[in-house]
Amino acid sequence: MISMDPLTQLNNCNCREQHLFECGRSQDLNMYLLVLDVNRFKKINDEHGHVQGDLALKAIANYLKESCIEKSDFIARYGGDEFVIVYKGNDVEGLCQRIHAYIKKLSFPFDLDVSIGCAPYHKDIHKWNDWFIEADKQLYNEKKKLKDR
Image 1 (cartoon, rainbow, N blue to C red):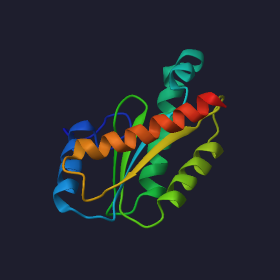
Image 2: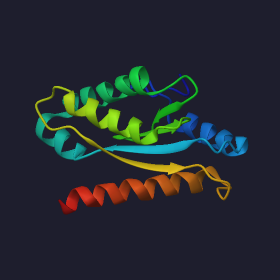
Image 3: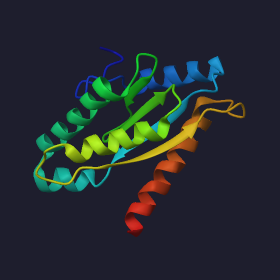
């Protein structure tokens, strides 16, 4: 229970930090860090209520747990409407496309989509936080593109 997010039943922030630290120690160059953020989540909560917002988060979490992530991968809830994935595979673009396609199919009384920032692990990353910062920058680039549309 100490490492579990009660709403989504995913790993929580404490577990995420430990896992990212261990990834950095492993020096495995076939890893990607993805940071997902639910777009316009505050508006969803404001207009449709927190219960609907929580249901949306649970639906996203369930999909990530059951359909996207392999046994060697890692997923955690990062914050209110953000998720973190450590993906060990060769098709990170395909994973992102599957996530977007699934979320578009979810049935809610509002539009639901996510922005995804992705950063490959590389030998110049010395602290897990550096890796997270790279993925987070990509996430905000995606969110900026969304706002500019």
